[in-house]
Structure formats: structure tokens, C-alpha cells
Image 1 (cartoon, rainbow, N blue to C red):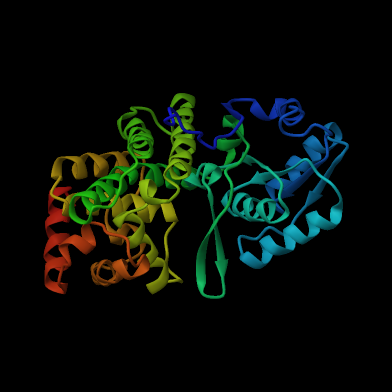
Image 2 (tube, rainbow, N blue to C red; image 1 turned 60 degrees about the vertical axis):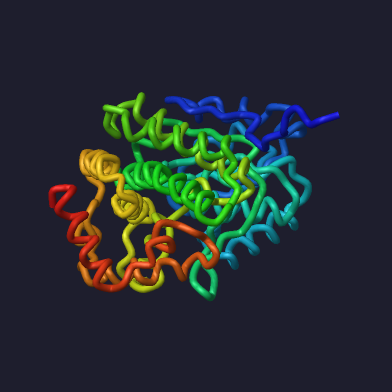
Length: 354
């Protein structure tokens, strides 16, 4: 009998709205998440502690753990602490990207499901099967299960610094370039493209790209949050980060590795990288649209707006393919010389109206 469908790992609960945290206790008491009510919370030392004071009385059987610092060592220590704490139904990450990534890794290490309660929208890690953690060699990506639940309270999101929301916009919009890179690799190398994963990432990016609202609007924040969730799920569908990461991320990783003391937010770099890679692909109209949207949301579209010189950008683009050996993108396809990179960037800056 042929297989007529496929099972997609996805959260059993996705709650995105104003006031969602008011129902956190009810959400977590869902029998599919915490049948006994025993929960291990991973929180930050700042906003996490404040939220603990708010919710601890309603969650008497929960234990609270701090120290998730975005490093592999911190994630291992968190896992050890949870393991020593007793038997839990689930791990709950309450905070930003560092907390979520540490908790994802720790939950996988101790064999528990994870609920991500995001306090900002800086990247698609809140629902991805990847934990990005700092290690002795720089930064690594570790495969983990998807969260079993996603809770995003728009009231809390609005309290986060605006740059965190803007970074999420850049991280979503660049998926237009990432999917195009994937399809380029299919044509040039025969790499298989998962059509569902590609559609999820591309439509999420298009929804944010074309939304007329601002980061002050609930409708826009909802669209952005949903897009980040869909992008994370697209990686699970593909079994790889391919639908979410192409030349855009290679350029961002190159900035991080070459200029570790000057790197801008990940989403800012990826948004710029996506627009530039789209221009390199010859899709000038889309690159201009991406740049216009990034500018409207006060995101950088030129290296100088991120603290990098033109020469830094030239060096990063030349180095970028080394950050993901084996991944085929427009950068590997064009294999630009130093002079060609310089000329291509000058043409890009002119096209977007620098």
C-alpha cells in the first residue's frame, strides 16, 4: 500500500495573541503537555525573574532554573540541573532566543518535550528543530525536536526592545532568497527540494514582505510571529535548515566569524544578505522590494548601517561560502572574484538607491 500522507512534527498548541500569558497555566495543564503539572521552567535573569514572580503562585508544582546563557556549556548545565530536580512532564522556556535555544537542547538531552514562551521575535529559533549555541569554536547548530507548544503574548512582545522585533523581520524576509538558493541548487546540482517546506518558508516571508503594518500593530506582529513559527516548521518538514538558510545566512555567518566584535543582530545581517543575494541572482525588482521593506522597518540595507565598511562586506562575501561547506547558493554558483564582488556591490547600492 503506498504512503498517502506524511506525519509532520508540529506543536500541539500555538497561541499567538494579546494576553496569551494570562492563560499560561491553562495551556500548560493540557493533558498532552503536562498531565501531572510537574514543569521545569528555564528563565533569564532579567525578564524571566519578573515573570516568575507573576506566574509562580499559579504553578505550585513547577521548578525554576536560571543560567541558560546561550552557550553549549550552559545548556548542558541546565540539563543536569533538570535531571537532578526530579521527574517532570515538560520543560518550559520563558524568555528570548538564548533561553529558548538552551532549553531546547537541555530538553532533548533529558528526553522531555519543550514549550517555548517567547518574549521577543528576534529569529525563527522559537519553533525550529535547531538549537544555536556558542561553543569554544564559535557557534554551533545542534539538532533537537520541535517545541510541543508555542506561546507568544503580543503585550509582552511590545515591551521588548524594538530592535528585537526588527531583527525577526530580517530573518523572515531573507527566506525569499534562501528558497531561491535551494531551487538554484536543484537546477544546477540535482539537490532535492521539498516543495512543502519551500512553500511554507516562502509564503511566510511573502506575508511579512507585503504586510503594510508596522511593529506597533497587533496585526503585523501576529503575521510576523506566525511567519517565524512557519519558518521553523519548514526546517522540520525538510529535515534540514535549507528552506531558511542560504547565501543570506552564509554572509551573516561570515560577518560573525571575521568581525566577532562588530557583528550586528543576526536578523539584520540576514535581511541585508537576503536582499544582496537576491540582487546577485538577477532579480533586481525583488531585491528592491526587499530593501524598501527593510528600510520601512528601520533595518539596514547597506553594510555601513551595520557598522561595516564596504571593504568588510567584500571580505565577508568572499569568505561566506566557507561557512557552510557543501551548501550551494548563488555565491557558490557565481564564484565571484574580488573585483566582481566590489562591482556587484556597487551596482546593488546604486539599484536600491543608496
